[in-house]
Length: 428
Ligand code: ACO
Image (cartoon, rainbow, N blue to C red):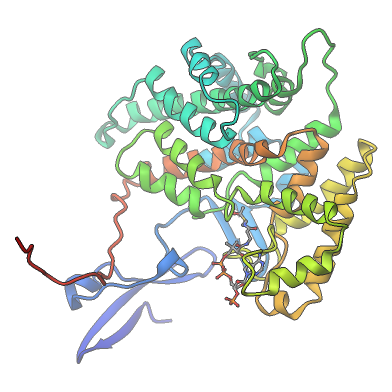
């Protein structure tokens, strides 16, 4: 097998090194193309560009495979808890019992945020979107956890500093998420105790109501665990690439994750889960005619898109969607909820799977098609859906930020093909 590829351009020959991944993916290393041939590559939306080498997540969009550090998403969703998965993503191996206990204890020791942050939160207008608040508060955390300049020459110090930043973030983001949720509901802002379990505590911090005994619901905890695990990483998507590119300027973990939250917000990315539920509700309120909306989705003069359908890399099925569809059934059944929105979702899916417009373009339900149905069943308001996604994605963002720093990756700085005016003179 050749490890070189040849390009002939304007009579000049260029040999590319071929980089091979552990799952046999092949990539041309174009990094010397400009110095050798004065040529760059162009690939809007980075549809066919590898930005880095990464050992965290493998996905094969054609085969519908998703693995974190080699473990299949099906295996992890069935057998692991979210904190184990977080440790796995960040450090590469599942934690031993001792490592798990230490990780949880260290998180618990940081389970507090500065009271001034509460004041910042209380000054946001009631109408502010929770994703904007979460991104701002994550950024504001930096003020209370000052930045240390990391030097890779002193990697041992930095390992400890990185570890401390990581446990702080894993401790504080759920508190911020719970506070954003509670403030919308007019509930007092509380702290929890992660010793009760990481996901158990998140759930309690969100749902505990004053003057009422809090009763833990296993169905809710299981559903939360699954949702968080399924969202925990997805290699170089829009928000993770954002985290890596912000971090590549040596911005702190908190600053990089805050940027990731903003990137996740849009409805073509994490915001799709809110958009899916709004779409399903609109269809229900419009009489439940799914065929009408299928036609709108296919009509190129209509801006309507079937939210929760299509994916940049999955061109067969999204393995997370399969798991979530089953989980949605289980949660509604266990909680005794009969939601007509699930029937609308199932009809849309069925129609799309039999419609050449969708099959030819390889558009299948993605992870967000069914997640909103579960969040709704858990009584999480739709504006909070993307926040829940962000909560799940935090370990993935951390893992990528850490990997990028440990590998000493260069600052991210793409090039462009300039198509504007050529030189002109200012006329006086
Ligand atoms: N409904 C109708 N048509 C669609 C849809 C959709 N949901 N998605 C793509 N198409 C069509 C496009 O119009 C285009 O058609 P054309 O070839 O006739 O012009 C073709 O399929 C390819 O679409 P692109 O937008 O080029 O595909 P891309 O890979 O760039 O986008 C994306 C992927 C953004 C996910 C897109 O499918 C979409 O907008 N889906 C709806 C939003 C959504 O669910 N986002 C969540 C993604 S998962 C996540 O971020 C966690």
